[in-house]
Image 1 (cartoon, rainbow, N blue to C red):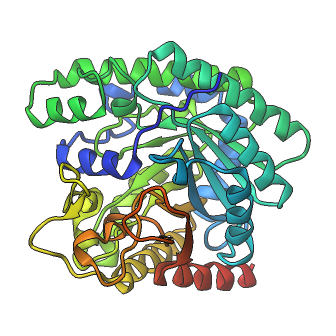
Image 2 (cartoon, one colour):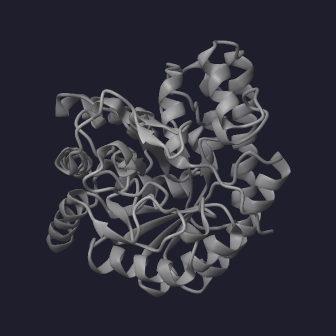
Length: 399
């Protein structure tokens, strides 16, 4: 099944942060965790390996996998549509220039996902394969997952290093969990406080379990899910790796450690499935709201007042600070969000229309004819790209 309907991830992040719902992560002994011990007995073998990766035992220090999110969608214009040729060049840059050993191949469209996964595997990259089809009927989302998972299993059996994530933050992507016909209506309903939280969590738990069971059926390697820490109440006994989309900001390093330690209690590898920030002063504090500096109601879209100050240095510093935290905790994996946001081009000398300021990409898209959506374009590395590359290269040399 090939489906080209996509959701702009930066807009999703903005909406998720705007919700501000403080759903607590339940402690292991809470009522919400009932029955997890029974499920956990079936995970004994996987759990043993997971404990070593989660706690840093077995002699490993630092992250086991260092990667970047490579998002696949149809593109908003023909110029930014998915291209196999461009994808191949990007993956070579991720391996050779960014010094990443892992690529999170995420997005929709089975053909795009599988073609990218094959190319990444052939380049020797570890593949974290994550289908994220959204805003379509539940059965289509599950079919999309099943097809992707079957392919991942074939790739794994051929000797590729591959893990499967069954999806990303189902509470917002899957219709029916939260009322609303699309992602933006669901956000609005959460903001308005019109959601029955207990009923929503029950629906979320049901779908997550269904996706996990389907993932197990079609894929026999490591399984995970990318969760929103403040909203998803995930039974991690269903998975081999605890996956966290992480956009927190604290002034003190110790606060990151304190917040992340709660996910190590499962005795399983902890993967930071996304972390990142936008490209302006104050962006780390904004978290997922970085996108909100753009007024997309205007044609062309423009940056709102008060006009923020572009800063690639701020983005680079946040990413390297977080990487230091993840390395110090011996987490399993961390994937920078994201490689590139092609539909948010950089406009040098025109800050009002420099949409790249609202991008989480560590590379920036440069149009051949600035302001023309149909023009050709190329990408250039930001300061964050170089900073992450240095960190990944040094870490790789230590191991």
